[in-house]
Structure formats: C-alpha cells, structure tokens
Picture 1 (cartoon, rainbow, N blue to C red):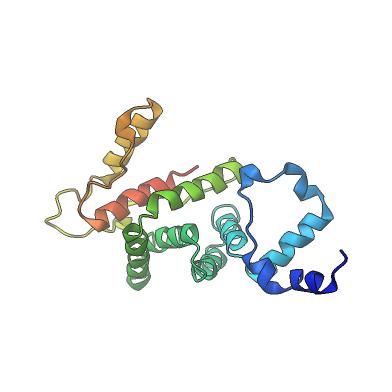
Picture 2 (picture 1 turned 60 degrees about the vertical axis):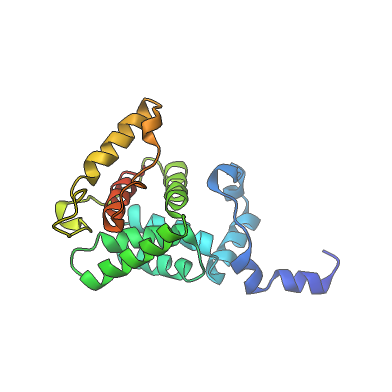
Amino acid sequence: MTCKAAHDAGEADIVHRSVSIPPPHATPWWWCLKPEAKRFFDRCMAAGNPELLFREALRELFIRRNENIGIQMLNSATSTGHAAAKYALSMMLMLRTDDNVEKQKGLELYRELDAAGLVAGSNARCFSILTISWPSEVQMPRIEEQHTVCAAPRCSPRGHMPLLYDYRRRAAERNSVHAFGRAAHIPCIQCRADYDLQAFVNLP
C-alpha cells in the first residue's frame, strides 16, 4: 500500500500466473462473495494460472460438457507442468475412439506420469476438485469396451481391469488393506492405464 514498485510488481501477469491457489477445502467460503477476491481470481485466470485453468477445464468437461474447450484448457495447464491437468488430459485422450493418434498421445502422457510416480496423487487431486466443488453436478463420461487401451492378445491381465477396480473399490468400502495398490503390480502399462480409466470415470 505504500511502495509503488511493490504494487506495480504485484500487478504483473507473471505474479497472477504463478501465484499458489489454495485447494477448495482450504478456501474460505466467503471469498466468492468478495468483489476483490473475484477480481483477483479473474486476473489469475486471464493470466493463465495453471491451477485455475485445471479447475475450469474440469468444469467445462464434466458440468458444461464443452469437451473441446476443456481439452484446450487442460493442454494449457499441462504445458506449465501441472501434473493433475496432465493426468486428466491423458485420461480424456485415451477415452477417444475416433482418433488413434490422440489416444496414443494420451498413453504417452500417462507413461510419463507413471514413470514419475504421479498417477495416484493426480487422481486424488481430480477427486478432491470434483467432489468438493460440484458433487451433485458432475457428469463423468461412460467407459465402453471400445475404450480399452491394451490390445495385446497375449496379455493375460487384458480385459480384467474393471474387475480389479471393482474389487479395490469394494475393499475400500470395508476399510480392507486390499483396497491399496491400485494396479501397480500389473506389468503391462496399458492395462494399468485401463485401470486408471476405470478409476477416472468413477471419480465423484
């Protein structure tokens, strides 16, 4: 309030683009009622803040059903290194049945996340945004047999990921230790991707 140089620096786009946005459960509910807070978040969004782009992309995809806009936003957030946006983008691309090139791009993004150990955490980030922000409005895509990523005829786990996901989910409902591990023990990366597609479309 007293230093013009600091004030001008705080108005720069790079500040609004890189500022850390708290998760929904840590955001005071009254922020949405304050014009100053709304203007601040609008500035961050306009500057391309990756966290806000990620959240808005989920809203476009699963509430407004604007897939093209949502994918564009996920691409923008992913280009900044946002892991959860990269995860959501990989899932949406692997759900494509009309474009094999895009499906393969989704698998490559998933491979990178898997190699970095970021899959489970990214899934949890998507879950927290979707269930805390808009629990009753979300419409996730349906997954059909043609969405299967693994096409290797000699891969023994192929086609069994829905059963494994259902087993893990039921174990979680009983607070069983068998709920943990996801598909980490499956050597086939494509089958692990199929497992995570099941987890993704059943997020809320």
